Length: 532
Image 1 (cartoon, helix red, strand yellow):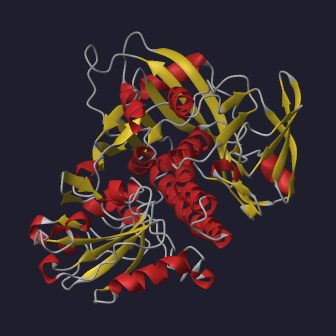
Image 2 (cartoon, rainbow, N blue to C red):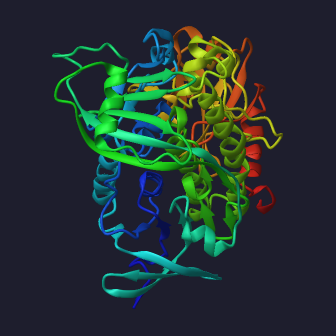
């Protein structure tokens, strides 16, 4: 049986219907690209898995128009607590309210993966009916000049499917990665982790004022406590060779942490190995690896799923630009170049630091070395700086307690400016476009190009509203108090180029030639500078 996808152009095929695969599909759909998701299982996961979604992931979901139903199904949190297990006393908390000026979502959320996946799948069905195909297991694939031919086993029998691209989001045992012949390097921890979901009343009958996300550190017996929408979750390690705990033992362990409470019931458990393993290559021509297929990261500080969503933030807009003819194939090279160091040396090292904090081998101050705003930026993944200018300068950690001058590769703060019809946030402005912001005086009639290459918009941002006879009214934003210039750490006029994923692509002092320079730079970034 052959299936060309039912479209004039071949769709992008995603193998793996977990959160990263579904969010990537939603991103492709948001950019108007045909997409199909093949999931080998007959149903979505019911396992006790990842449960905390960080702020940067919320912003990605918002960019793809899928945040509202996720928020509706989740529990919002403004405090990530660090506690000493023996005393039960706080050793410091990360307060996400420090990010109120950075994002429209100054919080993280708790939602178990078995609740998150159906929400994402329902949203994908609304956007792209029939795109998610359950019970379709990839057996093999081959690339050709026309695309990628997938050979799948399905409930109706074997299926050949021709796709434009293949994105492997099929987890740590990825069939796509194996078919690519890509090696995986790294290690597996001797310890395993136990997840336990349980019901008990810690709100009324046995009130406990634990943060909804609480890390109880201890050299002998650490534990993470997560308040899910309908239950509580414990996570703790078990030693090498130790047998899986019985439900009675799990109940007893919970009592040791939270005290003697009635009606405590274990409703779900999962024991899994912990890895730090990364694929040696993330791309072969039309085939890409994403999420756990590319990098298995210790899921401390919620770095497993959320690091995968950083991949889902970076690749879809690149595929859209190429599909629309707005960029050369070379634009796709930036995906692995930017994301691989973030996963290998960024999230991986942060996860190891998190384990060291929990084991009390180091303290949280040593691990973070910032406090306040810096800790909140780091722990929510808003502080990721990508190597977007290819000089090897990237980071996962913010090391200052307050914002500094904006740098190339950083995610731009989601600040508010005012258009002709009211407020506009920067992330809304650039969600489907590169955007150049010319921070200069609109009264002086700066020569901002009205027309340019597709995929690029240019605007003046000024504390002086553009006069009606300036010719700039439709291409200017009013910024009372010059808030952008102040937050960007700039004293003079400047032009900032933002990418569709809200990362800064370029920044330089403003001159009257800035509009032409930005257009030339944009064409270079998308690989079209030699094509006229």
